[in-house]
Image (cartoon, one colour):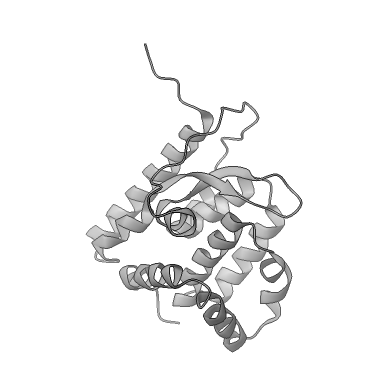
Length: 196
């Protein structure tokens, strides 16, 4: 008898195949370090958008472990929901490398277009810097914890580069394990960061 796969598993499988394919190509071409793979394992978790029920979504496995429990490797898959959209945003995956593309695609899939547009604008503002990579991690972190998204939606776009850098340093001080994971990710993705 065949094992039944939920719609969430199909989304996870698609993103994981895309992310690992991209990672293999980047490593093979010398664009990033082979240890980047550890950060690119995904799982089904939850994202918490303001005034909405938690939504099952694809999230980075290592970040889930940092936030919720070092022993938790895998959360149980949710009951299948036929209303779950399987629509991924291939254009976002193509134009936004690595975890950034998965984050943006998941936001669109979960009908958070306004947040997606704000994030794209922010990522473009910091294109070619380690700030961009760290912003991706901090956004995942806030969405997974259900933190207030006012900074992401309203405030960060009006801050100068120095103010965003200070905001990021303050945020990193909140969680040492997160800071270490972010710094490690930047180190492994160093060649994907293009000098401005």
